[in-house]
Length: 317
Image (cartoon, rainbow, N blue to C red):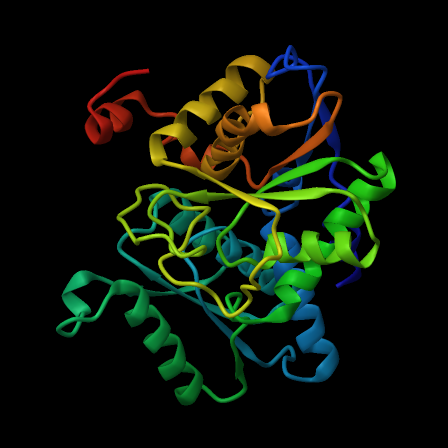
């Protein structure tokens, strides 16, 4: 793991000079997690989970890794398994984008594909994927599931991210982070508490997500929010929550690209919009850090497509 261990993490922190820079002397920076090798902050989760499993003997080069993921975590696992020479089966459903599907295949992942036609009465695509993982684990000897929604090493992997920010910038005032499995935000918050930092953790969640007790609703964009609360959730761990909808994520992405020249994914756009919503609560002179969770190339067919926006929202940007 040493080769990849050396290049995952230690991503740059960039000062943003044009977004909200006129707001009461607030300094805004962005942690460029999209510059990890597979393109997202999920490299850290995947590395920490798989490295622990290798060290404990749960996983070896003859194992088969099985995970339900259509997005960044699946791609991060595929990258690592490709490097390690370990077979990986990614359980995906019909909502996966062509881009993500092709990336998984390029890394050598075997695809277990589920469509609506495969569902039993009352069964959701999410539940079908989970059931499929459990079935495959029983059928395939020496198999292992990272289970990012319940594996504590998902969260532990992100303590290092906060350590990097702390080492470079000291005791910042606010950090804005998108939430889904709760692993990323939990890792940050735990590091902050363990080191008695003053930093306030502001979670950015999706309208239609149930993580903090909201009512579930259909969402078009992946990357943040969740249809179920993960086992990693801890109550009262974050200081505040800001909700953003799909269109606000799109507008945040476009603003970040227009003003700062950074092409980021949907959840990062949500964070940019959330900071704008929250800025009146931010104390004068504060230092804030936003997380760039992934790069924007995977969203060229959605967030950065005028045709997709018009089709789904009936408006043009």
